[in-house]
Image (cartoon, rainbow, N blue to C red; front, side, top):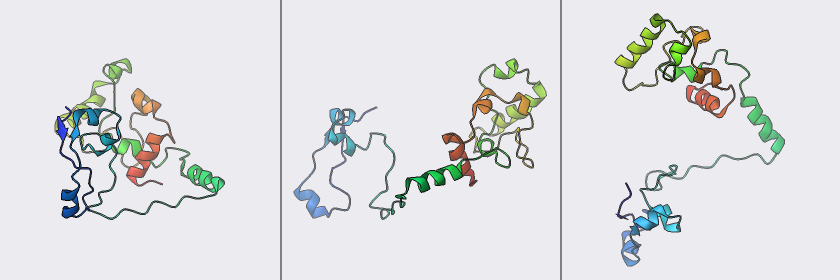
Length: 172
């Protein structure tokens, strides 16, 4: 899983080739990659959030933060949704109701309601972020709300996942 050594030099890509050859960076060892040493940050095998690539694009300007805490808090509060009406962001990218094994039996979901779920699974093995088969595209409400899985029942309005789903769906 971990490379025996990483061939990633510590010198930035934007440095001229002549400067790289004069001061070659040492190769990283497996110990560097899996330890908490400063060299770990240079290892390409270490998973970390992506930053911008200086060789591909210029750095983006960071967003300007308000120095007024009340203004920042009000801005955040205005983003919090008050209801799920006309939203369905969480259902728009969940292709099937997210039942846990055996949950549909415990909820006594009729077999005819599960058939569209089975068809979706057979037809779309990649789950290309299609809407849930139980989502009514006109009303944006669950057709079988009273039979919805526990994951749907537990999904909290205004939670981080809710806000991410709303952002992904372009809902403000």
